[in-house]
Length: 419
Image 1 (cartoon, helix red, strand yellow):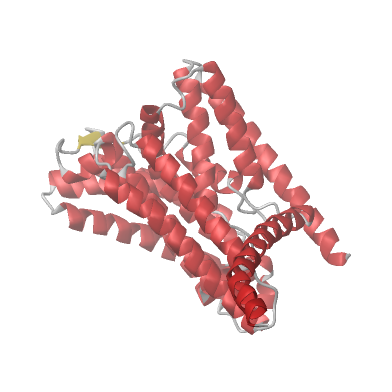
Image 2 (cartoon, rainbow, N blue to C red):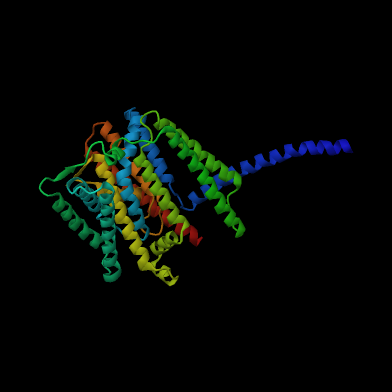
């Protein structure tokens, strides 16, 4: 009898480890099952963007092997950061079902203001940048006042702002038309050459996986305490490990060239912060509620005017920040800054990334994914020495497909909800 008990005691750790493996496998299966259920219900998330990006990269790599080289990808990340920050502001305004057509002009004026105050007037660069950001916030407050007090459609007010701010940009630059920023300055180096040391970039990759697990675990614990379904620990570990491995692989590959740009790191940091604000705070939930149904949000006690104001101010402030980064990237503030396709690319990036034009649904990561798609197209066509007209046509086609997918997914969610 004692021998039997001893054998059972020895076998228990083996059984426990077997149970752990089964639980881990069940967690992975549960994660995959939940993913396919969301897709069937019309909640596609970032899936269409990831698939589209994979197709774009495959085609351009087949046509030119330099496309996916570490050096080209590093340059691509530098270029993504400027318009990407502007697109992040567009995500905010689209979340409430509105639009801002002046982000390009605001970004150009911000870059011009930094050049005038820093180079011509001798201000400290930090104060010049702060002034540019405050001017961007003031523009957002004006749009919000027009919308909340006078009911002026955002399309009209921001279109008027586009023209007015563009005029201000031309006025402060004067007859010279451009101002060169000092080469060798920290601002210019930040926009052109500064990259993370290898250990720092690896540490950020590992930190992202740890944060993904901790946030997922806390969410699962809260849902379990409320009696709701939640992800298993095995599924959370699988997701966190996958994120860590993928990011470490990307960082290792980029470090074969110059490394991960600090400017792109700033952009990603803003995306993560905005994603947390939109998903984890009362303000973020209010943004989604106002964009989904303004009247229902008002009756639920949400200060609708304040939410609209915050969306307009954030959009214009981030547009100004993007303009400052653009000036750092080009080492100049000119009349051409913020013109051309900056406006359209910022809006297209948010929509292509998955933010709905109908309001109430979106993610900060839309700006990140969308701008990578747009810059990938631009970089690939440049390497092939093809006309920029093709870039406009391809980007327009991708934008149209993104809107069609969003519309079909919305119909699918509505029909699934009725069922």
